[in-house]
Structures are given as C-alpha cells and as structure tokens.
Length: 223
Image 1 (cartoon, rainbow, N blue to C red):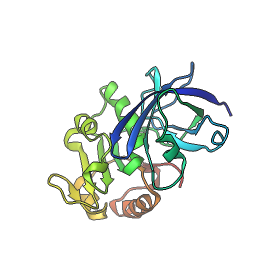
Image 2 (tube, helix red, strand yellow; image 1 turned 90 degrees about the vertical axis):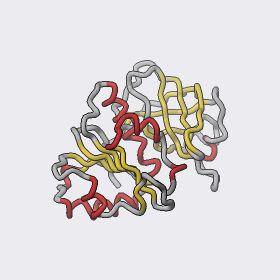
Image 3 (cartoon, rainbow, N blue to C red; image 1 turned 45 degrees about the vertical axis):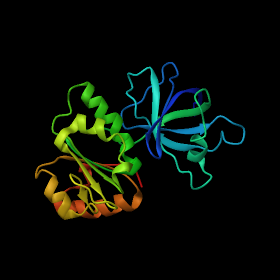
Image 4 (cartoon, rainbow, N blue to C red; image 1 turned 90 degrees about the horizontal axis):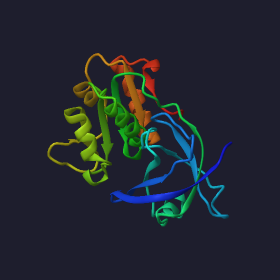
C-alpha cells in the first residue's frame, strides 16, 4: 500500500464540531468523487492509527480536502486531528470506495455521511450536470447541518433537511420514514445513494423496498 506524507495547508471551522482540512496533493494522486482513503497523523505513536475519510475536494483541485467531524468527548483520532495546526503532517494512502455517481437520483445522508456526496455534487455542478438530483439530509439540529448554504445554492428546492431533535420553520422534523420518502421522492427514481450512521442506513434500507426500490438501484459502502 502506497503511503504519502502531506502537510496541512489550512483548517477552517465549518460547523460547531466539523472542520475542513486542506492538504498538499501528491503529484499524480487521483481519486473519483465519492472515494476515500485511510488517514493517520504522522507521529510515532499515531502513524499506524488509520481512520477512513472521504475526499470532499474535486479531483481537479491542486489540493486535497477532508471535511471531518471532531469528537472531543473521547480521546480518539478525530480529537487529535482537532488539535492540529496548519503545517502538521498527515499520512494518506491508496484510494478506495464503492460510492460513485451512476446517474440522476436521490442522495440520502445522515450527519457526517454527507461527505462522499459533497465531492460528487461539486463535480456535477462543475460539469453543469446537477439536473434533477435530490439530497435528503438528516441531522439532529440546524447547527449540525454541514455546508447548508453551499448545498442550498447547488440544489435549491431539491435539498431537503430533516431534523430529529429540533423543530424549525422550513425544516422537516422527525426521522426518515417510508411516508416521508413517499412525500418527497419522485415516483420514478432510478438511483439511490445512501451514507450515514449504520442505524440510520439500516432503517432506510428496510423502507426502500416498500417504495419499489431494488437492491441494484442502491449505492452505498458495504456495512
């Protein structure tokens, strides 16, 4: 497995607990929108502690970008990432991932599960191919919504937010149920893209067959 040591170029706060890391891009390093790599911090005690993160930049960009939720409530890797400053070094490896754009459809994301779809939607926008794609994004509260303005600009009314822990005007409230999906998803949809916490994905996967969705219409990482 190839390893590349790269420096952090910038770190930007995206939400109260999410940060955008822009990194050096090794020469010849490429990925497809939706793909990920295993990342670790280049320190003797941490370099073998690998965690998967999805690229949120475009492959055509001269930098790499990850949009990462920082968990400070336990001493894990994202907590350590949250302590880093520009100039610190990370180790990135080969790219991998089963999530790739296959055609117009509905993207269903929960929390940080939005990350593979960020790169895909940015890539479609760059090609002027957003078309009638739709995004359903589940979060606990408004403050948790990652890149709300950008996604609204990209998708307009085809960007649907649902909040489980907060009632707010203009936002659906509750969980993604079969009734909710019936109300929002067009009757003819060929592709479904799914990424989020395992309990959410399991719940949605149980509901999709009731909408007539076949397994071969669903794109997601193996659970």
